[in-house]
Length: 422
Ligand code: PMP
Image (tube, rainbow, N blue to C red; front, side, top):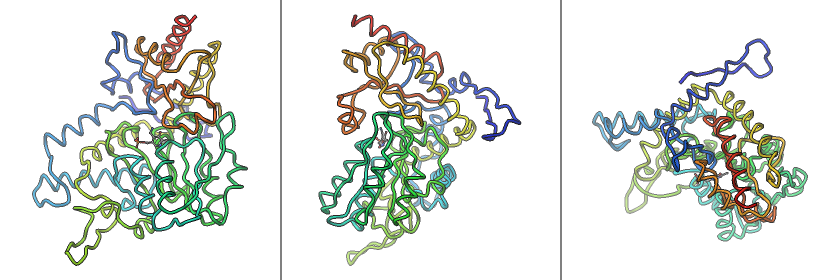
């Protein structure tokens, strides 16, 4: 792959070299395959991303050359595996600018991370009558764990409304913040609309009242450079598989003092310091939250994915994807009867759409026949679908390995959908 660098934002001095999307694409074996006898145009990146050869090779290398359990063995294989797993933790910390790798907890994914916070920090800090603020555009993973907590504690969930364009109502948010608010839990980027929420402002409004904030970064980490210190939140969660890494690995970042004071999530090996039948004591953070054998190859793969993205640069990725998003939006908007759901000015590379008198599942099935993979359904955002009074959308979500040809093929396939239904 030819790597590129971007010019510093605002600088006219250095012209950024062209983003070499063809070279990047060749790093992803699955993108070289065919679907229904046609080259694959993979446009379901918000659901999961494809993996570069470097990530696939790293997992294979682990299993073929140093597979061993970590943190326990004194022999070389185990020492090597432990070093690779812990090196991945350091890479994650640097990638999101966390103050310390001790604040990086490996989990299965964003869903498990939110559940961990709800079950530990939430059970300790949220009581009857306390309020948790969410928004209408949350993924079910950032709704249901809080509902479970509310059922257990008697807490109340408050929901920030959104505009027709799919932007959070900041006025409504300001109204909802109160002396009873104990947590704000919000998505950074909406998986169904693509809206990029103004999280720094959201966090600072909560912080002015001393309220902790959890940010669901599942959809932002693959598209934007993340700096948890700059964001100022308390918890930040994401999944590896949307970041070109294996499934089954994800990250909870939380401020060290919060993790220190949170009770363990699950009990078992590795999370303890001592165990006796009289009682057990806990390991240091982050190990206190990593009970049992973790997804070692997944963590190593995540570290390699981060290295790979570092070779391209998150700012270069954001710039390229933004350009592709504008192109795709323009091309899809040309199709009569097609309506894009989610038209906020600040958007990441997600385009949800509906078509007059055509069910999204029919759109998905017909475009699949053309080798174009998109998602259809409620995208785990049923309250958001209720807001728009629709059951589902078709959704194309882009990654940096997509190109204008993928978009043109989507547009041609959607034109075909219209022909079938005319
Ligand atoms: N939050 C958002 C915004 C998401 O898009 C997703 C995945 N679609 C999740 C949370 C949950 O991620 P996972 O299924 O990997 O745990």
